[in-house]
Length: 213
Image (cartoon, rainbow, N blue to C red; front, side):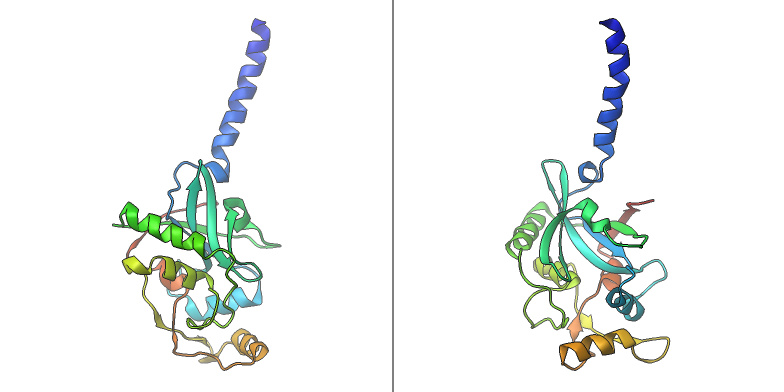
């Protein structure tokens, strides 16, 4: 019996450590935290990054809000092809042939009541479609619009004139030209909006870490 204890004790310890290190069970996440995902290899993600990058440290093209339920980390976000959805943290990394970077941020000087209201609103919007036009008045939500709306009551984020111009060439990015041609509408240059790169640079956010370092 003593031999069995010696053999199985290390195995049990390893299993416990594996469980503790699982992405979905990290204890340093808090409900209301914001995750920013780095550039994917899709044409739409590249188009977003090309016209919205504000700093060499920020190459974010997608974002979502964290909800911790019974020690499991969920991410609520608005994604193309999915609309507003709720997924496990590990699903935020899913992409083919891409090395993803996920930045973990926390809102500074925010009270628990505000966070609770934001998450209640975030859950109420489950199933809403993705807003491919990126025009705020249109139905559905794009990722940063979704975060802007749920935290609008605390004025965490602000809207700014959108631009779809590639600063390198000084004209509309080819990806955006194709995107709006496919939609059959004009590029909404200068209309109010928001984007992950700009929101990641917000002074109200505290950068905590890159999850996959």
